[in-house]
Image (cartoon, rainbow, N blue to C red; front, side, top):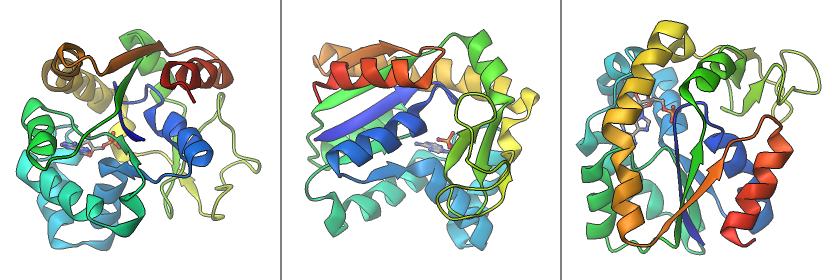
Length: 210
Ligand code: AMP
């Protein structure tokens, strides 16, 4: 299964990706996590991306397309993958087409802007492995500590309220048109994000037929 997850920042793409990944045993590829790792390590790509990420803007297409090309060429992607946060623009989607990658389904998780803003204030991420949590909806076993690797949970710099508004604007202007792009190809399925995580997961699995 080759899957794309669409949705506003904070809609729950990463969380659903983790659960699909467990069920189907295929890797999740999150361009956001790859970029944050590069920022942390101070690589050349990280330095190029920093100003865009900090301001809630999209990193230039050629940079993320390069990241994805390199990642999808790895062995673990042979039996399928979940793309979380890519593509985010029409040129990125066209680049996937040009690479000859045949996506099976595109799942869009729909959450209203006001709910996104409310949810983002409770989001926490592991500074070491990138796993994502929420202080109400997806609590870690031990407060402030990552279940996966024991790393410290932090608030993402780009989750502060002003930046969230910019990221939502970018989502509506640049990413949302992808729904029409994939809708026309008959690949789009839509799920309404629910208050309870398990309810969204149930709808997601049903929509994907898994
Ligand atoms: P995310 O964790 O998916 O919310 O991504 C965090 C930030 O990384 C975004 O706000 C962008 O600055 C950058 N980013 C991640 N994926 C992409 C992409 N496909 N295209 C452009 N920028 C991206």
